[in-house]
Image (tube, rainbow over the protein chains, first blue to last red):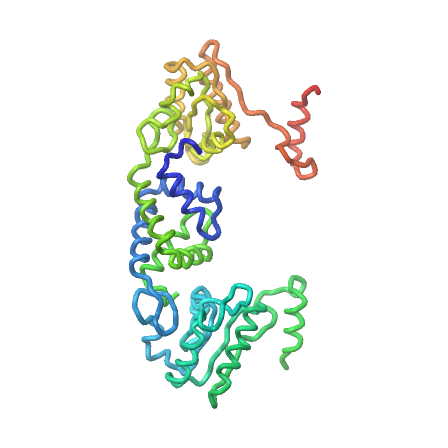
Length: 200
Length: 200
């Protein structure tokens, strides 16, 4: 692109690094931004700076916010004695959007992975144990992905927490997603849904 | 998303306005940016500001760059007497990437459209006529999209330029794209390719 001068090319290259954008969509996004300079481009630059300066991980649960301890960990209403363990902040946000969980969270920041050399220390698992000991936790809900790594991590955490007497360890139910059609589901999901069938 | 505090939510909303990104991919992009704060997020904010301040349309052809007259219009090497007329800056960049055209461009900024009330004045068509009169142009290549609006615009421009004696008016060839398989081509393309068949 000989005529997209250096600044514009640098911007396209940076945009192309975002997940979900390739070189082509990055170019399209940059042209859109140049057209919407006042309405989108400058506000976006300012918002990026503000978040780059302000965003930090909650020291308790690992959620991302603009304070040392996030709103969920500060709220007394959410001290229900339940901790929901998730892989990533995106999963925490998904749970919050669903609006069905009223307790607190613990963000691991990934899953155990022998291949990627991710061990318990990288994952805030010791911090989870400390919270269970300190916060009067009665239930830990393991809401990790239904992948091999996710399940390995669930088992490992269940093992580490098995010493806490009276602590309930649960995991999310597996089955047919709402709106899901059997025809489009994989065999594993159908099998799990059948095994966990409920009486009407 | 009750706990993504205001700054972060504002950033997600702005990102979601980019073409190609929805709310879900905007959230993913923002989490990625927060993880790559020094390597991507701050440089991106700075690049956005630099382009917002510096980008402007070339006064001659409508290309986007950082100077009043773009590099292509300033280069004597590109004064070949050929002007390639394109709809958008993205099309100009695509032509430049292909590296097959050595003349200059004219960016219309869209196509004529009765539905959207886009007339010749909105499209730099008078400016194109002025350039043909002033720049010693020998050929105008109409490289507009093979859509109804694109073809209408091509015909309109051809009509307006028909008064210039000795001016050659051409359009891009239609046919089978390189690497294209007949099985996947629409009837219109196959028909055009057959009508324009070449002797071997």
